[in-house]
Length: 230
Image (tube, rainbow, N blue to C red):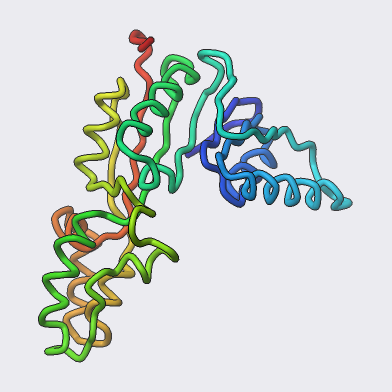
């Protein structure tokens, strides 16, 4: 997402705060929100260390807890990275309503989520039955390799690309682009077998191969300039 100096950006679920700090360094006004007290503390510590550096530039960033006490139409853009999969559907719907309220008309929403549910529930379990034929032993659940602790209810709302775009549309957003990336699963599934090189070459150009093998989902959406949700 391109952001210009002076813009207002909301970073929801900031984690360690790398995105928020990079944006703030470019002159963007950032409000960073995360329900985890540990994440808030970590971002504040990182910010303090950055400000102590002798060559730092002005940093406009505020950290907050879980709530969004932000005025309607304040944000030019919102980032929702690695959050969707951790929220139950009703929680996600409520959060998207708040983001829609906070974004200005025509404001941008950038979403990243993983893993691709089709990969972990269809592709990997199917190929795990036969993977020893090409010298690879796959786990039945690849989540445990891609995301530490990803088991049980750690990811109650994993998405496919189509499901994510449907959820965003129902929340009142228009979709500019949605795509899948991440070739790690192909490396993991096929090891050093010669078919891996062929698949990787086609993977970069094929939407249906990405639907089956990509691990990460991205979406760029906008709040319509003539519609609001209350």
